[in-house]
Amino acid sequence: MKHLVIIGLVIPEPASTAAGYRMMQLIKLFSEANYTITFLTSSNNIEFSEKIEIQKIDINNESFDEKIKDLNPDIVLFDRYVTEEQFGWRVSENCPNALKIIDTEDLHFLREARRKAFVEKRETSNEDLINDIFKREMASILRCDLSLIISEFEYQLLTEKFKINPDILFYIPFFIENIEKNKTAFEERQHFVSIGNFLHEPNWQTVLKLKSIWKNIRKELPNVELHIYGAYASEKVFQLHNEKESFLVKGRAEDVKLLFNQYRVLLAPIPFGAGLKGKLWESMQFGLPNVTSSIGAEAMHKNLPWNGFIEDSDEGFVTNAVELYQNESIWNQANKNANEILKQIFDKKLYVNQFWGIISKIENNLEAHRTENYLGKILQHHQLNSTKYMGRWIEEKNRKQ
Image (cartoon, rainbow, N blue to C red; front, side, top):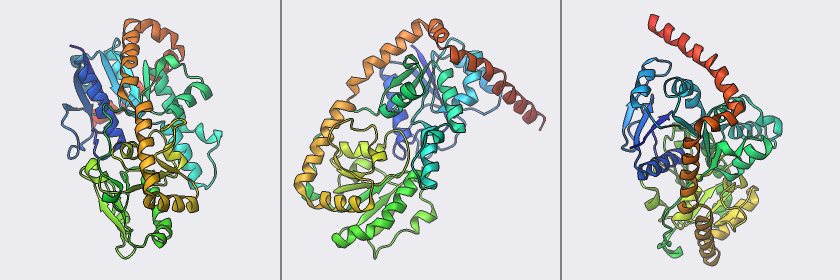
């Protein structure tokens, strides 16, 4: 039986974060292929995590070297670039024949570029993309044998703009096995909803945007409420709660499917970010049309009609939210659009065979694959002469203390 070791910055929380849901999908994918799976992390976020085999590790500690040698994995999967930075060189030294994969989740440098432009109230420029995170993240991608890319837009950005060899990339979005028909009708649903983990800055900015435009929606729909859900809501989030305005902050959602089946429209005026938006993907599955921004819908529907409306202006967003809430015909069509998007873009069958095909190809030709990735070899060499010795220095410092 083959062995997969996952090294995670945090333990997956699929009920709270899209990244956690994504990781659990990958774990299930490897489990279905009969891999033994061990999850290594220095994190302590146990309370809302899934029940998976977890072993604790320490950063900058030689105990990891013995652990990874004992585990002797066939594949090591890093959950983002920072875990590859911390542990990638140790994996290469102690398990040189292990295939190294990084799940980028989303491109962190792209998210940072858009955040900076948002703060400065301007469009994102090419110069914004070449930030410090870009240099680190691209180096991690090049050092690994394969990088999993969740967004087709980001795949094209890497291959077309930054000329990354497609042989070390694989596009695999969220995926779904069975598309269920929506069973909760238009008239059985009420109110607007928004959801998002508040550790993620774009979700906080989304709620601030909703707070600023909600009065205009409520003017048209005076008996309708907006319910805000999200894990890790701080006091500043709950301070936005206002019952007189029907702007209600609810906190953590325990069951998204049950929740989404109660509401009529999801509102997500996401101002910046990257990757795929888990809330929008789930809204497609549970018969909940949405109004979102162009950033929210990015890479989620190709040229297919959206399951609701895509609008970036405040005035247009309000108009579309009111129309989608009131018009049953448009609402029903939005759900039909969602089913088509799920079928054409997120069907698991579109990716699984290709995924195992590329894994097998790399495993059977690992040395040749690495030789072709000459930039990766260069960066691996320099990492072993920089990050490695910094890590060893910290080890020694900690030992003396």
